Image 1 (cartoon, rainbow, N blue to C red):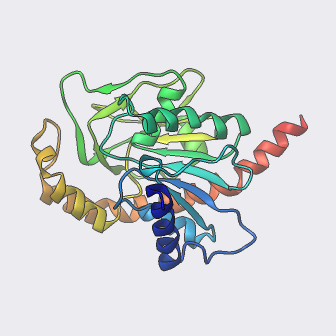
Image 2 (image 1 turned 60 degrees about the vertical axis):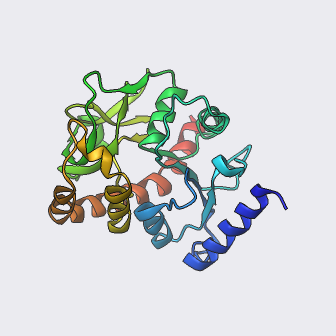
Image 3 (image 1 turned 120 degrees about the horizontal axis):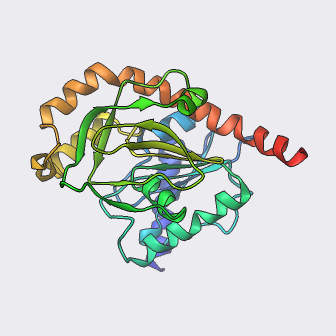
Length: 264
């Protein structure tokens, strides 16, 4: 059996174990793209399951394919990872190219951190480290723009980050939220959204990142480990509520907009 097939069996077993295929049969699954063997869709996966959506989890880095069409999916999410959108690896290039599928089909797409950088790069924008070598690891403030407030009126004041690179705003996109060292924090291109921050991070994910990636906490701009958890105590409730509201609207209202535009 090929490594890809083995991973597929593990993925399907994990889906059954976590209940990701026990949602309402009337709702199409959401495609979930992950980048490490131990990665999970975290809070976004939990929120989607709570809304009734099954999860179709794939890891192209380990041989999983991506669908040629999203006609059998409610939407797609590409998550973060330690790699860069600038890396020459075949799977990175394939994922960036694949984003054409949800864009052309006007299906709901969401990129988280690396996924947002991949979306920006697909749209022709530059992805690069901060000019002074600064990073964002911990909680940092964001400011919604007027366009962002139209999408969601209740943005969190601070959100969780874990990244070394940022992106420029792609042409013809709307900036939804801005920040300090990395000004582009959230943007929209049609029915596709990109978030530089990590609303998906669970407590367990934060423990793992601040332990396994502790070396990054010495970089300029990063917060020490204890401040990550202090920030979570202050800001997590609002971020969690905002995420559920966003995801509900992202999947339930976007298809209606597609139909309305097709009728014009």
